[in-house]
Image 1 (cartoon, rainbow, N blue to C red):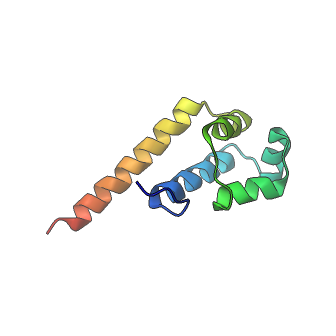
Image 2: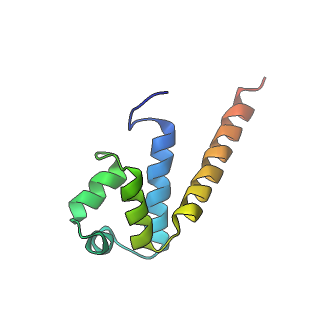
Length: 92
């Protein structure tokens, strides 16, 4: 398994994280304040410059107001759709 922040799955994870923040009506600055971090920290996380571990994901979800389980389920659904689309595109 590739351990890079540049995988398609990680890119989809970051997109899902940004969408969750925006759906909550939060700016990066507002999220940073809730996390006790800087806006630059949030930006680096969302761009993939800084990898997010599970404990940080949990903090992000709490600050956004989304249960971790709901976030992960939404991400799993998005990853499954992506996999299905790739599989369909590869069929002759």
